[in-house]
Length: 213
Image (tube, rainbow, N blue to C red; front, top):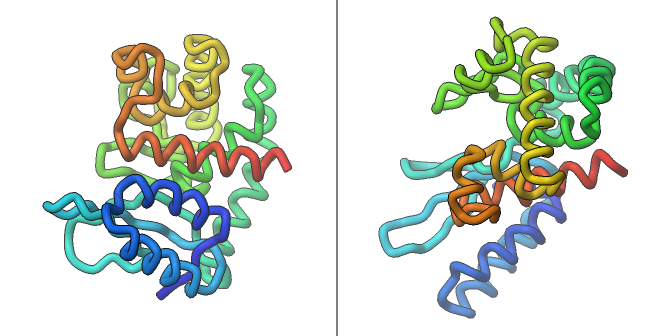
């Protein structure tokens, strides 16, 4: 198999304990994961018809969803990731400071959303570095979602709006960025109980802490 970062592994163990009904299976899964050498890699999740949860970095068959995107070290993709991050950092900091948003938070979101690929497109139709949907792009005057400056500006403006809406609560802001502000409001200003959103919040918070350091 491929390789996982220790911090990602620890986050997953807590998540897995919630879903694994058999202690022996849970212990076995821990041993299998710990045996995997350590680095960063994409991570996929699948829930079968019996409610069993599977994580892998090498999905085979259908039903797997990407929950963590990080290019693998030593690959062309990782070199592009490093290069793009280095080139885009000044622009990200400039846009973030203009709208009074922590640059580290913006970088964490871009890392999670697109891995610094300005041409990234999701299955839902989100595009660009901060994965803007058409409605959000129109709302903030973004005419070209693959243009780095426009995409970051629109994404940062939306992020600032969410921060103010949720009184600068980072987790609620991230949940709204992923699932929509209406979903957070629907659940009484709490992170919606959607596994994808819960995992997204944890992932971006982890990246955020890394960028702060």
